[in-house]
Amino acid sequence: MLRAGCQLLTQSALPAGKTGGNSFALEFVRWRRKPRWLPVAKSKMFRVPERTKQTEEERTELMRLHNQYKTQLRSVRQFLREEVVRHEETSTADHIVLTPEQEEAEFQKCMDANAAWNATIAKERDQRLAKEREEKVAYVQERLDARQVREEERREQANQRVLLEIELSKSYITKENLDAAIETALANPVDHNFAIDLAGNLYQGRSTSQLPDATPETNQQVLSN
Image (cartoon, rainbow, N blue to C red):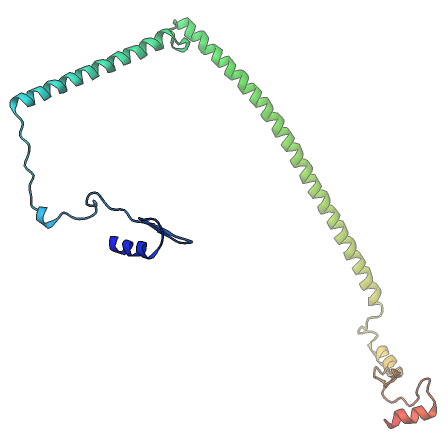
């Protein structure tokens, strides 16, 4: 890795230890000791470190210092604990010892304040619920009125359609007037065929021989075409 980094550094004209370009930068780190993720060396795999031996005088002195430190630390903790308790009992009004009568009066005072607060909240809640109820009633009434208007419009359209069908039914062909309708149709034949020439003239019927608004020469020319 270090050799590759040295080659990159040699090829580039950047300061030693760093290479860079328009979009990247490299920095090489030399470990002072072996990284922790590497395994134990084979030469030191089965080596058992020798335990340092202490003399009796050294062990006794270390034990004395340790006991002295623990004792002093325990004394400081006890002193701070007593100081905190004394401070809470004397300097803070919330921790003053009260008589049972005073505690009952304080509790009753808190209960009265809580009851007043609950009453205020209940009043505000009732007002809010009443307002919401009125808004909901108005919304429902508006929806009902709109539905009634739609029903009336639909009923009016249905009535107009029924009247139209009744008016049209007068000309319907029924079983009673079927013979008369057939005789009328035979007596008055209707030809729906028609033709249009290049000039845009319309000729009604299948066998029309008369040309509208045209001279005899034009008629002969159109008929020949």
